[in-house]
Image 1 (cartoon, rainbow, N blue to C red):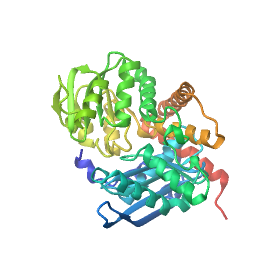
Image 2: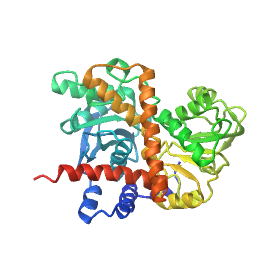
Image 3: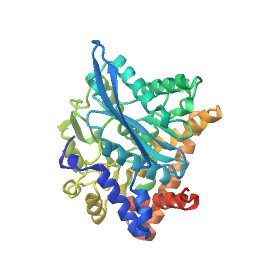
Image 4: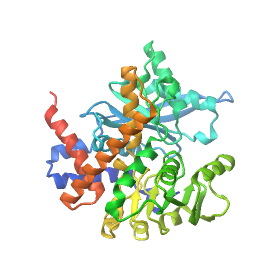
Length: 420
């Protein structure tokens, strides 16, 4: 899915976003410096025994960006292109995301430079356990709570929880979220990101002049978040899914198709490409097709200024982290495209992670309908909070979300004071 945006340093983007909001809020230089620096970052290099008996050294990172509002929270990704600056940016975005939806968390992120597609399950387990032991001194239920991200899942979290618990000498389910249900995971966590995105699209549609029922939806990145959003919009809101894609390419049919059938096709073949009754398109072409709702659910830096000039959707709902560059935001706003920014649109995942953590700490668990009801309430409230700021300040939704989020973090830093 590489394009000209893939060379952009995501942390530079994250810092520029802070500057835009700092100007609006009139923040002094000292507060700007605090907001543009991670609180703590750890880089570890560790050996892992491979299945053939050889050893390889892997590099991993964990960045805790801000903890003024509570313990830091954020996923761990396994990817060949993981860099420290990418992890810093993702940790910053997690800080603002938690603040937008008013969770008592700061932001963090982790990553290991590896290609999980070329590794066996045993190799991934050994890598995960060693990485967990290396970052163990700075994680914990009161300090920093990891979760799944790109190419990590509930099994990864189970290994981290077991490793951390073994080091502590007792079971600590609250050290991670996104765990299997049997180990203290929450009902509804697996589909929470996509479900939260679908709720926000529903709330924004009337303001954007879009009717979701019968409207068209395109999804770049038919992974966990993208596929769940597509299925829920199709099943619960009557939307027509006209295009989806994955790393191998995309499919398109103007009359729509059943996302459940596409998911089955992908399970069998490894890709959405070749689904009967559709024509093949590239990931770049998918972003430019005529549709009511576009959901970028792949990697960051997909929507550059050049791409933004060609987007024909009325709503862009960011299920991915950081898919849109700042110059593209300006173009989309001027073209009256409603952008639902990542810090709002994909915050359903961290919201249900918060529910999981709260349930673990209490040792008391909620049924699925209660989880979804609480998630809906938070997503609806958060969209309305952002929309009000956008209207009052005459700014686009990303800036409005950042104004809301940054102000809450600034208030927490100010009230707590600087120690000593």
